[in-house]
Amino acid sequence: MIKKLSRKIKKIISLPNEVKYQHYKLDRVSSNGLKGFPFHRLEPEAEQKLHVAFFGPCALLPIINYATNHGHDVIHVTMGVDESRQIHFSPPLSEVNHEKAEVNVIGLPLRSVMAAGALPFDGFENEVFWPRLKTEEDHENYLKYCVDYISEFVTSISDLLDGKPTFFLSFWEPRQNFMGSLFPRFDLSNPQYFVTRLNAEMERIIRAYPNTFLLDVNDVLNSMGRFRIQDDYARELSHASNIFDTTFEDDGRRIRNSTPVSHIYDVDGQPDVYGHCVFNVIRNNLAIINAAAPIKLIIMDLDDTMWRGVLADGDRTPYERTDYWPMGLAEALLVYKARGGLLAICSKNDPELARAEFDRVWRGRLKLEDFVSVKINFQPKSENILEILDEVNLLPANVLFVDDNPREIDEVRCVIPELRFLSEEHMDWRRAILLSPSTQVPRISTESRQRTQTLRAKISRDQTRQKMSREEWLRSLHIQQRYTVVRSDNDRNFARAFELLNKTNQFNTTGQRWSLDAIKKLFAQDGYIFCVFLRDRQTDNGLIGLHLVQKNRIIQSILSCRVFGLCSEYASMQVLAQHILEKYPTVTGGFTATGRNFYCENYLEKCGFTREGNDFVTRIAPACPPEVTNEDKIAW
Image (cartoon, rainbow, N blue to C red; front, side):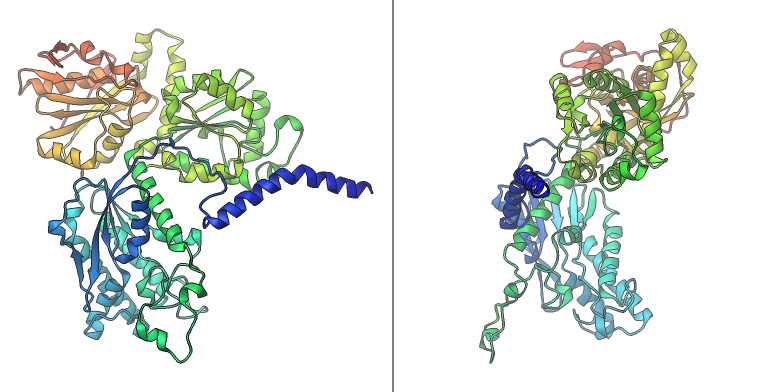
């Protein structure tokens, strides 16, 4: 009787969650899996409408239809293939005005590639030629001919690849090895692996062009499942597109009618789901490129956040503390750190016990050294987080705080409302940290890989500074600066300089964000980026500042928050102004308040500039701070 009553009580207690689950399960089924569960979104809610130029065949229509139906401005230049598998655009590319498009999306038909690859063998374009290949050499040559066709196609549209963000859609890879289930997986005789190799070669080719990327639609297909959408069970694998019913009249005159292919595979709604998902990837990737709302620091709680359970509740084995979601979360945090993100800890706990538990539980998989700042005490978490923000010189809007306790979240939100938060639905934390545009970057620089090390060095410098005068402290650092000039987007320092230019907020004299196309135009008009590198006795900080220059005008000055207070900006201005004044009678600059760049609002005046109209002007180079040694070898 007691057992029955216990089971009944448990059922009643769990009912709200069961009802909640049934509601979102029903919603998910009715919407093809796109609604229901409240997945975490780390970006601001407002979503701007995009201007997108699509170049490709009818296979792009699910993506185009989704974009159009949701109010985005779309241009579609259709790509047709004639009987000889030659590609034709309609309208011709020479007649297309896609200047206002923010992003290009290009889809090259796989069957054009595979048909063209057969030409040297068969003497004609044959999209079902691949089963005739006999030897390893045949397969290698076939791959080469297909890759040559891809290369020629990319070259033919190179005018589109001028720096505007461009995504080439990958080829749909066959869902399995159609040579047979027991044949080698990683062999060119397997068409699945063959198309994977084609995708790899296409990415290699397009990566030679600036701001051009491969968008792998196979990620979307693998996530949603291929059975109800991919057509390679019904037609030649090189068609590589959505399932749709045949429209040929004779197919309806068979002796016995067959079930429509869309009914066999229950296709209903799947192309719409695919279009939705791929367009979301396009939008998210564009946000990554533009660094629209970057998260630069993730602050983690410990109990029931970095590990399972509460430290004060008693001993748990490392396995009990970390298996399943904690281990997955740890991996996600390490990936985020590898991208150049910063990690910190803010926990209400006994510091000695918590540090010992951290080492015992994680056994070196995660280390306290992975975190730029560790605050373990019983102070209000808002106070600890404000200290962390001060240590790393970051704005709250660029910081994510993860804590399972809603009361702690509320306390911090009341004091620092601009912060971003994760608290409920802990099983979605890993996905949010790994895949949100805010936590991703378009590339990883040397400086990004060293960011935790350089910030820890900065915090160490600040702690040392409290023990001596400012002048003594600066002299003790033995600061050395070197400089280089970037005049092309092919320069090895360009990627990091471009990243710094578009991500810096606090020391940014105008706040202007630059597209790759705009920077290239500046280079073409005698503009350049004057890059600043700083080393001190504790660490090599890498490229930490820059000035954007055209003739005698300093268009914009940028400095990383990692080196605030080291006089770097004054030392670099001395070198740059002196060089400009050798050619021109004056140096001019400007300042535009953004609401976030208070740190540099008096920078030009401190360098000796005076206001003349809307500009700041100087006729004398400022002195170099005695605490900084400037390298004098600069290739102007």
